[in-house]
Image 1 (spheres, rainbow, N blue to C red):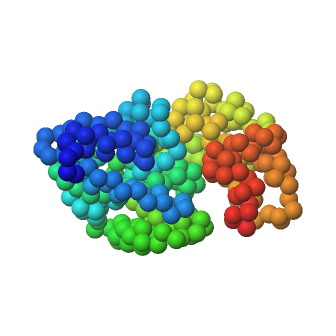
Image 2 (tube, helix red, strand yellow):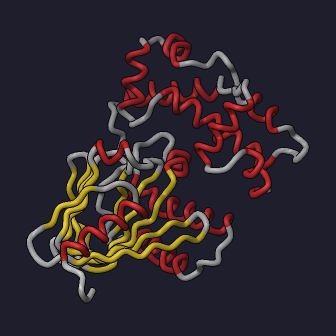
Image 3 (cartoon, rainbow, N blue to C red):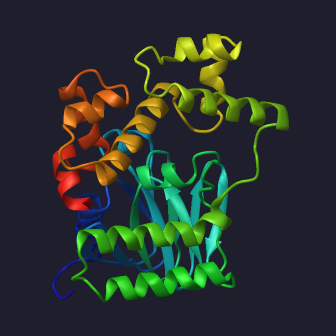
Length: 302
């Protein structure tokens, strides 16, 4: 950029990153700095194409506090190499590789030389629905040699060239990418078999009583024969918070009912059926999870 110093370019690029991708900090690396950012939005598809080199971009707890963490960054490496770090795991992406980074946890990206990649924002609630019994493996290198990775790249390219997609079409594209990557993103059971069975039994218990107003962590712990602290630790080992899990499970079932129930069914009645006694609380929680009100959701998906 003529007339603009490298320092100014660096600061302008970082400001763009913070505006489009969330709050990040950065530091220069040895070598020439390159920094370009293009963003595009096709309803539910939010994409950022980054051409970058000579910089380390990272998120600490400080940046996360000032940013929306309801996303995963699905990183598609287009050209060059990049080093990604999260959860004490470090990988090197090459052209054609993919990885997933959780926006709610610290991470770090290194580009020692010029490279290019696309970051697709993947809503947390979509992954939670698909990975209900498994942790999502972040900062895992999904090799370009894998057929599902190749198909995901093609689907991404097709989606990028069809910016006129409708809401439902763009959401279907997101769902398709998750379905393609799910087999290689699922971690092996990280808990011993006995604890894994116990965890699944707790989830079944929650589902069986999901419509009850008495469903609370204390009740779940008592019915499962464990302390509340042990219950919290079990969910924490899966990256979950038990009360949040219960609320999100109820909201997902509400959304399912909104898509299939008779249009005459009252919204308050649907919320009440799945454990939300207060309609205002139900409406607020639903909008936080899905980005729109229950009424708008029903109009869009029926």
